[in-house]
Length: 357
Image (cartoon, rainbow, N blue to C red; front, side, top):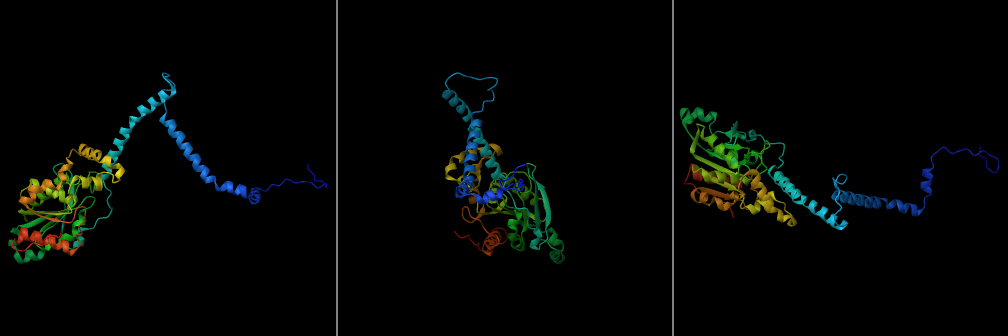
């Protein structure tokens, strides 16, 4: 048992003393604690560098087969050389990921109900020629008042129709502001969701979506109240490209409205398909080739010059600047589209409201 000089028993202290030690620490100790995050960061970077070097120089056959020919520098350079052959594989994987991400955009969960137009509509579904199921909303011209007033004449009458095609990464509710004005002008209106909006199908900037437009037009032609010779299409963005591609192969389409169409491949690559940073501009051809190989399509078909025969032979109204976004809720745009379609299909003697440059 320990005693002090005066003969008193020294009892052991059971309480912790680290708080007192912290209080007694001088400025030097406090300064050291301030630099601990920096030291931790340095250790972390050094550890990452060591791990990277070990992975880079890892030899899976070291225990079974070890080649000692040549100097250490030569063996190291050969090892690094054959590992660099994996760089093209990594680049190819990155390009595939970018193309897949670009053609499968994330969409908002909610969608406006077509009933918000306060018009009667039928929910319709139909298949494309490549077996993609699409859904839409069909707004017939007939209502109960017309049937009562015109009786059998109303049932036998055929009306012009218009297909509304939304833009890339959008849904059919983008076109809802056009429904009532066109319906009141005497058109049967079909709004439809393109492929890729409700499933796993890719969006191909209007190339395969032309099959969706074709399916919508054929569905309208089977309706007894639709005049098959007076079907028009209004498309936005890549929906305009899809409308023009279909009109190119369907001479019965009487008129097309193209809002903010894709002008050329370079605009499409810069805006959506390829990385935008200048240092990654060398990846544009890779993204273009990967898209064409993956989907078996010629992306050059989106060039606006490809539709010159359609624009010369058919009534085509262009709205919006290149890379712009037409707001269909603005009365100016609605009136331009309504006036153009009425002039071309219903009352050819009315003047056309032309788009501003």
